[in-house]
Amino acid sequence: MADVFMNTYHRLPVTFVKGAGAWLSDSNGKHYLDFTAGIAVNCLGHGHPALVKAISEQAAKINHVGNYYQSDVSLAFAEKLVAACAPAGMEKVFLANSGAEANEGACKIARKYSLKKHGPGRHRIVTLRGSFHGRTITTLAATGQEKFHRDFGPFTEGFLFVPPGDIDALDRALDPSSVAGFLVEAVQGESGIIPQDAAYIKAAARFCADRDILLMFDEIQCGVGRTGTFLACEAYGVRPDVVTLAKGLSGGVPVGAVLGGEKAADVFESGDHGSTFGGNPLAAAAGLVVLDTVQTPQFLGEIREKGEKIQGILRSWDHPKIKEIRGRGLMIGVDITAEAWPVLEACLAQGLLILSAGARTLRFLPPYTITNGEIDQGLGILRGVLNKG
Image 1 (spheres, rainbow, N blue to C red):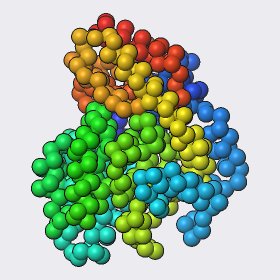
Image 2 (image 1 turned 180 degrees about the horizontal axis):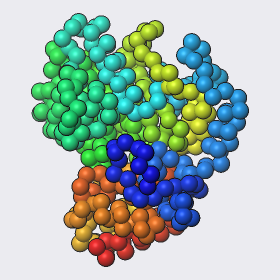
Image 3 (image 1 turned 180 degrees about the vertical axis):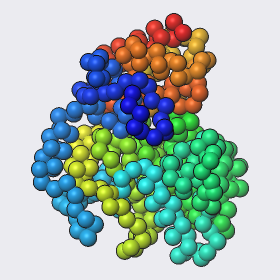
Image 4 (image 1 turned 90 degrees about the vertical axis):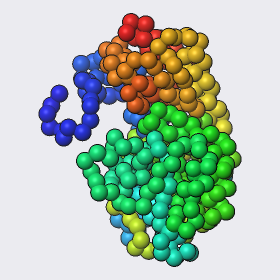
């Protein structure tokens, strides 16, 4: 592989040139079944006809409009996104480029809200151990995994980590004299696909409401239908103050979003925040297709059914190398007794793309459009690899 990129990724030895549905083809013409969706980005698969049409048509109109103005398509996208998130109490949106940007925006909203309403000194943000919120200095500071912190300090101060599931520890951490917000993934992705306990989330919502601390859901990986509801937090029956989205939101075009409910919607004022490319017309055109496709009850039901099928097949094997299976919808983690990376390499050689999440966890994030037959085919490859290894 060409040695022109900085050494930031442990890349597998393959270069892709085209894709169709749940399949990718490399530069040698070999085909691969994709259980990764670009790490939850290509939610409608590769070369989705409606996405291709929308992006192509928009590219012939306007690619970009500066933030002194707005475009018709970006406005339509923002309106449809807010409507999709209205059941969770969202009222307004800021459009950005990425998940890290979205989480930066959420942290800024929490701090300004608290400063304006309660005065200085109340700026801390609580997150969970095992969380992942981004790669910028501030979102690294919010990430509760030490392995991502090495060599990059000092970090933005004011972040406090608590263990997931420990209601008493969260109660102590959410000190109304010093805390502005609680940032949580409904399903932790990078630490192994770990859904939060319902009682824990309900307790967090109660603490935050009673203490006027903003409840903020990072749905970068688990949102936009990935878990079988449009927002993962919907399954918990809580109404957050802030939600962040990215990854699958435009089906492969870079985009991020910060949505605010009643408390957070009007915190930002002119000049407080910005993003040059945020919500540009190409991303907005693609995002409209994703929203029109994903948020229907039938489509969300199919996501849940496919996820149940994958988990059911994996459990039916009763395989000695599989320790635990977790997940919701098409966001599934499988703990194994062996190192994960050699399994990824072996699957790649057999034409299957999967992910890891930690040293001994396999992660599946297939496109929502994957067929039942493709699920069977991909899992058949995985079983063969596990049997041989």
